Length: 68
Image (cartoon, rainbow, N blue to C red; front, side):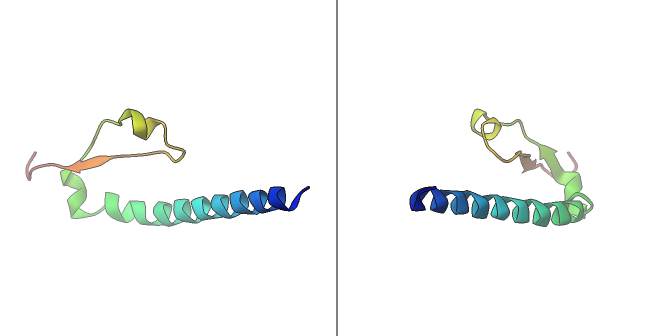
C-alpha cells in the first residue's frame, strides 16, 4: 500500500471514530432532552431532501408555541 493510501485509511478510521463518539454522546444526551419539560413543546419537523441524503440519521424538531 502506498503512503498516501495508508494516510487515507487512517483518515477514514479517525473519521469513523469521531462519528461513533458523537453517536454515543448523543445517545446518552437524547433521553435527557426527551424527558425534559421542553420536550412537550417540540414537534418533529419534516426532513428535507438534504436531510435524507445525510450519512448520519437526522431528526429535526421545531419549537412550537406553548400549549400547542
